[in-house]
Image (cartoon, rainbow, N blue to C red; front, top):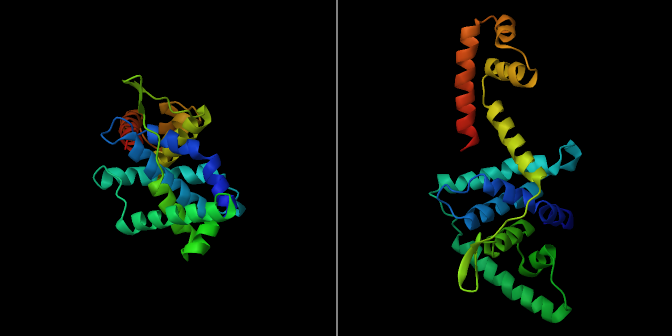
Length: 219
C-alpha cells in the first residue's frame, strides 16, 4: 500500500463507522461490522483511480458495504484465516525489530520489503489483527455505551450510495417512474400519460417499487 493509499484509509475511516451503523441490531457485534468495513476500505484504497474523476468516498462506500454484507452471507462472523494470523504475528515481530533499530514505526512498504510480502497483504493482515472499537466499555465497574463519532456527511453519503444501488437494480421503466415521481416531482397522472399507463397502474407499480427498494436498503 502506497503512502497515498494509507492517507485515503486514514482520512475516510468515518465512512466505515457510518456503514457499520446501518447494520447494527441485526445480530452481529459492532466490532465485527467495523473490522469487515475496514477491509472494504483498504480494498477500495488499493483499487481507486483518481483519473476517473470519481470522489474516493463515493467509490469506497459500495466496497465497504459489500464487505459488511459478506458477514451475513458467511454466517455472521468475521473469519481470519491461519495464514493471515501467522502473517500478523510476523508483522508484529518485524515492527518491534524495526522500532528498535530505527527508532520509529515502519511504513507498510518497509514491512513488505522486510518480509518479502506484497504491500496489499501487509495492509490486510494489519487491519485483521488491529483492535477495534467496542460500543460497550467499563467505567468504575459499570458498563456504559460508547459513542462512535462520525460526521453527518458520512451518514448522508452512505444513504445516497445505498439508494443509488437500490435504484440501479430496477428495470428501466421502474427507474423512470421513480425519477419522474421523486426527483422531478411529477404527479401520478403525468407519469401515466408519459409512460402510456393508467394512473391506477402507476400507483400500484409505485407501491411495489417502494417496497422492493425498502427491502434492498435494509439488507
